[in-house]
Every structure is written in structure tokens, then in C-alpha cells.
Length: 291
Picture 1 (cartoon, rainbow, N blue to C red):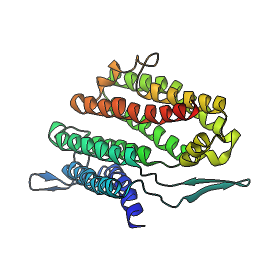
Picture 2 (picture 1 turned 180 degrees about the vertical axis):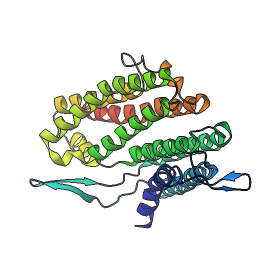
Picture 3 (picture 1 turned 180 degrees about the horizontal axis):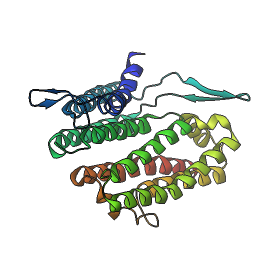
Picture 4 (picture 1 turned 135 degrees about the horizontal axis):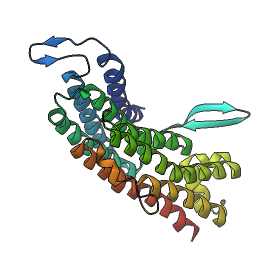
């Protein structure tokens, strides 16, 4: 129970920073104490709150990795999410070796990005808004890598897309940034459509397979036909290709640099390299099980 709470905190701490920065600090009239702005659109508190939240997530991720290395993959109870017409859709945490590594990598690199952003974005009119978006992006990535249910994974997947859209179009006074954000959002939808079709196909065959571990068990146990598993793997792969800006969904990537330059570079590096690696690894696991 304590470990499960720790994993949820890894996700919820940046999510709290997003809500607090975006709703509380940004809309309260500016309060200045000495050289520091505590509230308003240029709140110094927003930057350090995000740094603290992501830094805490990084420390907790290290603890989770140590636990997995010493005791192996961890199993947690599933929780009921949506119960409609006799179908119970659940959500939960998956913590295996790959997930534990990804938590450390995502939170660690994101922490460095936040620290750099404190100085890089200082004095910008959208300072508070920037850290609100970055906190949402980090929480979405952490939620994505720990998702136990395919629908839960898809929700965080789309939150990553929304965060990318907001960050690419961060400079509201630049028409080129707005155009780049729309292009990225629309282009990645093609891959996401393939991902969504795979989820619907998976559900139509057996709703219990929405649980990722149940899906792997069905494949390795021969309960899922090879043709079904192949189509599902293809749909997942299309989603990864779209989000990773691979051919033929690659034309939006150069325009993505319209966002804050250094942060945009690290953000794309995280999204392209690590999510491509994670989802390609998951898909290859399906393909290997079918062979």
C-alpha cells in the first residue's frame, strides 16, 4: 500500500504544481515581497514550486527503482473506474523493471529542465503559465509510463499531446508558433487514431484484455489469436510513430522548435527517444509472443 501511494505521489506532485500554478498563482493579483514576485503571471514561486514537485518525484522514483531491483516487479490492486452495462473498466499502477527505469529517466531529465527554466524564462510575461504547462507535461509522462489499463494509458497519452500543443504554441504573440502547435496537434492525431482503433479492437475481442498484464498473459498463453495480436501491435506502433514524429508523420517536428528553445529540445528528446523506446518495446513484446 505504501509503495502504491508512493507511485501515485510521483504523478500527483507535478499535477498539483500544474493546478496550483495555473489556477491559484496565475490569477491572483501580483504580490511582491522584496525582489520576489509571489503571485501573478511572473510568479517566482511557480518556478520553484515546479522544481520542488518534480525533484520530489525524482527522489520517489529512485526509491521505486531500488525496490524493483531488490524485489522484482510489484503487483498492485486494480481499482474500479467506470462501470457501465456490465463492463467494469479499471485503473491502477504497473511497476516492472521497464516502468521503474522510465520513471527515473523522465523525472530526472524533467527536473533538470525545470531548474534550467527558472533562469531561462525569468522575467517572461508567461513565466507562471510556462511552469504550469511543464508541470502538466511531466505529470502526463509519468502517468503514461505507469498506466496499467490501456484506456488509462490512452488518457495520459492524449494529455501528453495537449501539453505538447500548449508548449509549442507558448509564445502567444507569434503566429508561427500558433501554426506550429496546430500542425503538431493535427499530425499526431493520425497516429493516435491508429492507437484508438487498436484499443477498440482489443475491447471487442475481450474487455478484460484492456488490462495490460491480462493482455500479455492472453498472448503468451495462446488465448489471443496471432492475427488479433498483430493488428493490435500495429495500432500501438502507429501511435508511437505519430507521437515520435517518424515517417510519414514527421513533418511537424521542425516546427516544434517554435516553443522555448532549450526546453523544447529536451522535451522532444524525452518524447521522441524514450516514449518511442517504451512503446516499441511493448509492441515488440507482443510480436515476439506471437511468433
